[in-house]
Image (cartoon, rainbow, N blue to C red; front, side, top):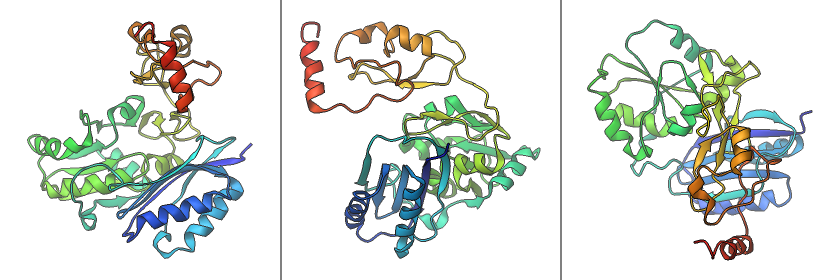
Length: 321
């Protein structure tokens, strides 16, 4: 039964006083059942929230009353509970960390999910599909024909594009770029154009909107999301598993953070291995500040602990660290 919604949205726009908008959002959320993560900057807003059916209606109405936030595309999925444990609203200098000035007037052409699907079905030898998400996201799901850049951080993207030019002629190549909800493409498609690529296109609404409108046609696996679900199908269609457990190599697409707080590695592990190793990624992680593992909560991520809980763990491991 649908009682809640998962909602993803963003808008690139000029916000003169984002710190004021942070305060206004926090004030609004005090009286509404909405949880999630929202970032505001001079560049705009980026949000992922979960809320009740009524809460979403009131939030959209409140946002619509403010001119700078009109026209936002809200992408929603049905839920039976919250997928965040708190509401966080913060200022960020950059909505996406690139450490470069971005000319948003030079973003790629937004193409609809239907046009994206048709383009993938064309036998075009000059087509280049780029996944501009993190590599761990691509492990559990990606589009067919997609290149997942082998980057530690996307601050390396400009250098990566220069290397791409050695294989893909900027004047002949048709570039398709995609990300989870669309916002990363707003930052990286201008960099493709800056590097000399003329025909740059980005998936409007990202993978989320594609799944809602086109199902999983030409999509392999599932979608990594930054909430309690961690990994979820992009549609109601049957979703294949393309990744394996890092501990036993069995087919699996569940992510978890290592229970050792000083490691905290995000890794893929099956339920059997997680229970056997109590949420640890290796034997070496048995020593140190280890969070108690609750198999009933898995695959939800470990919750942020209070200062008192962290101190208790530190005292408990003092004899072995």
